[in-house]
Image (cartoon, rainbow, N blue to C red; front, side):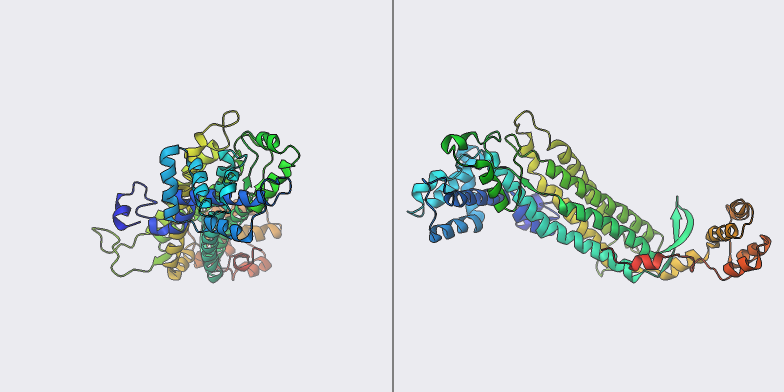
Length: 458
């Protein structure tokens, strides 16, 4: 798409952010859908020609098979424009694909006699649902999963490198038991990995069973062929999982499952983006400046956390659309209505917003520098967090009401090293308990955080 076209695009996906979603364009665009439909039509003819129960269609010669492979695989703008030419007359996008494939078959004398086997016993939804299945599978494997893995890897790198960096926790916005920066990053890594695993495990279904899912036309023509088995084998040959029980449409439940997984992955990312934004605001992270880049039109000093904000916004857009599609697509009146058609055409837009969000967070992470001095200073001013280990040790030694005593001594009060030492004296602890606690500092009170940050997750 030319630069003027970018400027004139209505959608931000195809306009401002086009360069970021270019890998999805050939997969999820109208051209991509036409390409996958063409592949299904071609593969069905090839598959039928190998069936002994269909003697009227002779097995294809190696040369004819290669030609059909080229029709299926070498799909370009010219092919897409030719399909649009047919659609201008048919006003039916799948029928236009059928006519395009027939036209291509007419280029070879040996294929002309079998052109009517194209789309044999098919309803448009046989072609459509498998084409969308191939689209979704390709987009997931070629774009989304690699971008998810890059995002998870970037956060995990931060987790490992900062595994031992002590940091003050905040629960309810208040000072809490220390952790390490790396451990907090690892928490996010594990959450994202879990959703990514579920996302990748969802079966992508397809159906190829005729007008209302009963092989009515198939059996009329060839009553002795086990069409249920043939259909299952064909769908499997496309790399999809066969769904034998459908109406005219594959009911899209698997798409809802995929999109719910994506929504959860995105919500974890949203949580992460907001936390990093807050850490930047508190100066726990510095952002590397980029020469020539402007942070504010009026405040020259600013370096804004725009990448995390961009990711947050795109996650919101993606999840709003994913939620609607997951709700809408499994619902279709009786044996089918057409309300799913226009919704399915927005799959690329949903995945595009996801892709932009993942890339933005990775870019933002690449510009971060840990401000260890600020993190350490914040922790050093929060000795009150040691009230927890003190009262725990008091319990160990059988001292009455340890929690209540520490609460009275520390609640709403900021302690220092000196006041902490004084507190140990005031509590009249046994000498052995004082010995256990006197060397404790906030930066040492991190439990197993460093080990957990470094621990492999698989």
